[in-house]
Amino acid sequence: MQFVKMHGAGNDFVMVDARGLQRPWPELAVQVCDRHFGVGADGLILVLPAEGADFRMRIFNPDGSEAEMCGNGIRCFAKFVVEDRLLSQAQETLRVETLAGVLSVRPAWVQGRIAAVQVSMGQPRFQPEDLPVALPSSPAYVWDHPLAVDGHALKLSFASMGNPHAVHFLETPVADFPLERIGPQVETHPLFPRRVNFEIARVVDRGHMDVRVWERGAGLTLACGTGACAVAAIAIARGLVDTPVEVRLPGGVLTIAWDGQGEVFMTGPVAEIFRGVWHE
Image (cartoon, rainbow, N blue to C red):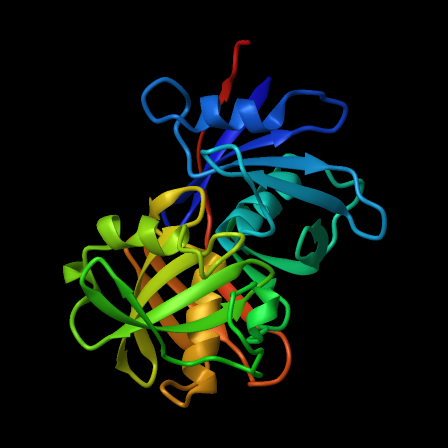
């Protein structure tokens, strides 16, 4: 099985043209994503045929679970299908089917290669039932919901970008927060029946935020596209930042734009790391 390894802001993936292939994908994702005995990645991404879109994207986490969407992954997806000429003809915008819906993707070229990609990520949804969150009532949105985890008094704000996110805002540097300890406890908390992605964020100024992510099914990652969009949308909705806002993650910077009503637009870098063959 031929593959290409790519990353978007340090969030790395194994890309496979899976059209015509049959594999036990969840089990294979566990093997391929292993950083000691496999290729090593934050996810396995498949290119598949689609109806009503150019391609369908499936993404499997390192634990074998399937994610609804991945913002950094879909940028890698666009670079892969365009540069490997999987399209029948050149086009400026791709339509990619995901479990979160059909999204539009626009590559940016630099010296004959795709160096960055803008993704129309869809509308953020703030209702607890969209994540879902097990709350006794379903308000239009939830800001600063109190949750005590391992001695930390968290105040969580919720948003869905096709997948669930819970965000805790800090006034201290995000690097000082014990995310590796608190993250898995928030992910699997009974408050979230389908688990959750957990972000910690700090507003630096009206145009910049620092963010770290614990991803559902993947753990600590250097970046998360849907997480950056969820954090930015919550911050914009709460009046904490302006649009566009630069979200600085350990692996790089994503630019997020949202007018407060329509779709969120994410722009970020993408790069190929290497190509190989997985021997089964």
